[in-house]
Image 1 (cartoon, rainbow, N blue to C red):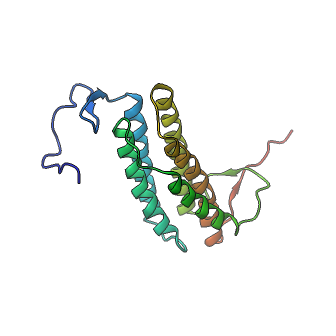
Image 2 (cartoon, rainbow, N blue to C red):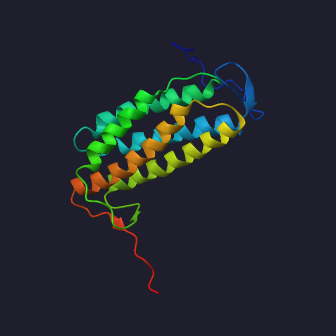
Image 3 (cartoon, rainbow, N blue to C red):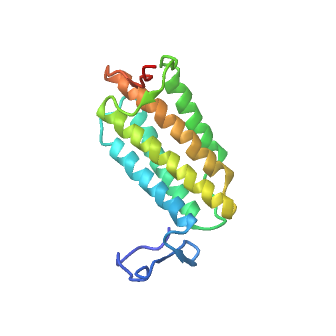
Length: 182
């Protein structure tokens, strides 16, 4: 178990730096901090999604995802540390296939929306894509665990399919993009 926080404020970041898990200090806008900060933001949005009534195993899947996102944040906070594995990516793929098998094939682009839960799921998807971009930025500067990047990529796909599944579960149609009249 890591350190227990007895005081929430330390004043060590008052000048714009923060401590990484290995004890080193970096600027609060460093690529590594942007990456794990966006993963933390994603975890918060997944938590918001879990406040909705979710069908089937979705809540347990999202609980598992929240724990893995916390692990991923820890991984990104400690240079050279790895936690996320290909097995985690495979789990997402299995859940994605399970949900997608029950959906109609896409013929049009989908806009975020539909039911409240699906709208939050779309928000999680877009934050996930941003987290993925932040990890790619970090990867251009320092080595990043390959499964971590694949995990975010697959998670955004799962969240897209999950949003469609959430709409279907409550009988709300997906919001289809309408082509402009020519």
